Length: 339
Image (tube, rainbow, N blue to C red; front, side, top):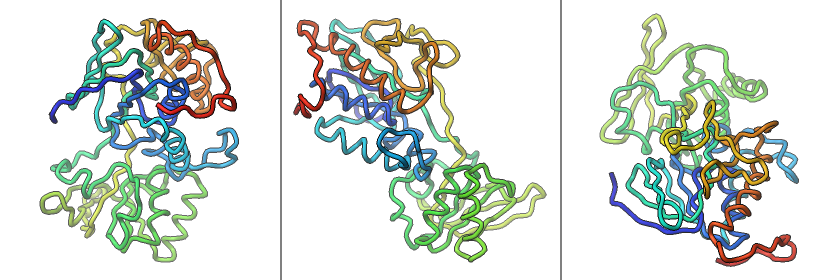
């Protein structure tokens, strides 16, 4: 566990996906400070981890935007409010205080807040890691479960493991900059957009990438935290060694509510029941928005989450400023306040 750090804020936001990031904006517009906690090592939630290059078509005023672009725009939007992020750590405990709550993370970080907005998607996400010996020693150096900057792989030998959208998208993105790109999958059928799969196969026909099929991961070679080769094998036991500088492992995310399940919230089938006009949970001062929130006729869409955030932020205001009346203003009148 790292050295403990203590923080105080108006609103603690659990989850740094698109809905969590927009929670920062809505709270900031009401002059409430925020700190954000997420189990993943980067902001963006599923948009970053699962489909950074995949187009999204139902974001208002954005006819087509990739997951990565959406997160970039949301991060730009919240810059004036200077949010504090605590990434790569999960909230493990919640304690009632005289004025609000204290959250403690898996890294020993404590955040005291007057209100909490849970925007954790379907729970705390983490990578579904392949069962390879000593894989931990290479993680975040030469074994990666999500990618933020493709330039780090320029002129490198890359093994991409997986058969979904993330694996195919990054095969397309790295084909022109990596020295070698191998896509390892246990079968010839991919679970990605057909158009993307067709583009990947075309690159393979041109010799820009190699589809290593049907193989599965067997072991890793390297020194320290630097990978040197990925060993693979078929179901029949045929083995092959791929020299590699990096491996990108895309076997999806595992998610669970984790400690949130033990906080006394009204949880049913992995989601939190909320009052639909405020997104308030059954515990005063705690709100839930986005995919983790449930109410009759709920639509699990990013745009629904954005609307829920506005309701939750306005409802949270009275816990942050109990002696102050909230006068609703449109952003065209108020502008973007400074905190």
